[in-house]
Each structure stands twice: as C-alpha cells, then as structure tokens.
Length: 197
Image 1 (spheres, one colour):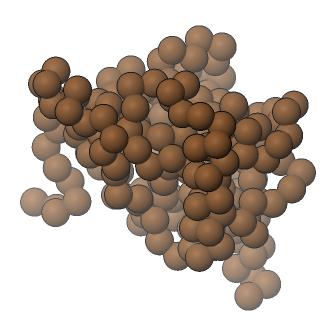
Image 2 (tube, helix red, strand yellow):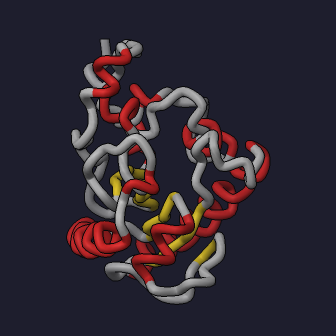
Image 3 (spheres, one colour):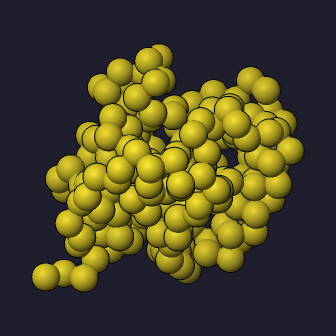
C-alpha cells in the first residue's frame, strides 16, 4: 500500500471539539507551480489532520474541476499534489471552529509568516483561498478574484473564492472555472520561468 494513501476515518464529536488550536503540517516542496494558502484549519480538518478535510468543503472538487488533478482526490490523498507540482499551507496555523474567530492582527502576522515561507520555497504562484484574509494582509480593500497586481513573498499572487460550503456566492461550476483560470495561467508562467532558468 502506498504510504501516502491513507484510509479515511470520521472523527467523533469529542475529537472535533478537542482539535481547537491544533495545526496541520504543510504540503510543501521547492519550486511548486502553485502553493494554495488556506485561511486556517477548521476543527474537523484539524481532527483528521488533512487540509480542507470537512465534508462539504468544495476545495477538492474545485481542484479537480479546474484541472489540477486527474481525478477527484480525497483530503487523505493530499500528499499526491506534491507530485503534480502543487502544495497547501495555511495563513494562520491554529484550528478554529470558524475563520471569523481570527483577528485582523492574527491574519497580518500569519501573512508575514506566509511571505517568509513563500520566499523560502519559491512557488511560481501563491493562491489565497479566501478573499477577506488577503484584503487584510495586503491592505487592498477592493481586491477581487484573480491575478493580483503585486507579488507576495516574491511569487505571483492569485485570489480564489473560499470553497467552504457556507460560501453560497460561488456555485461548484463557478469555483471550477476560477480554479481552472488559475491553473492555465500558473502552468504557462511556470513553464516560462523554467525555460529562463
């Protein structure tokens, strides 16, 4: 059995409650095409120790719908992304029940840590998965989904909608379209970057 492929399990309510403040290891490597930066882990996600792990979170379907993965991956297969040139981290490491429990100061401090991580690992694009945190970190109050005008930690910055099931502004097809636009742009930019080096 592949060591990176794990059997999914469902945490108990007590395990979910006990996950407050826990962290999840980054899925990161040198010279990625895209490093996805989530806001912070939710309690369910932290309980299972896998990024975007809550049932109903649309990150994995959007990733597949956007062409990042050859099939729909489960959160337990996240490490397979590294072989494809993609990684995942979080702006704020600690798990909370809701992202709105994070203060703006905590988001800005997390943004500084993320910038240092981006400088170290040098992805072509850092993709912020959530609009509000990017607006806080960047100070750009009217930032919109898509490629941003300024770099972040030396990488191109791209803003994606939050794929949480509670974000009703974006339907699954809209999320897949947004993710697909990022993939096409990032893959082409990464190819040009490699040709120049």
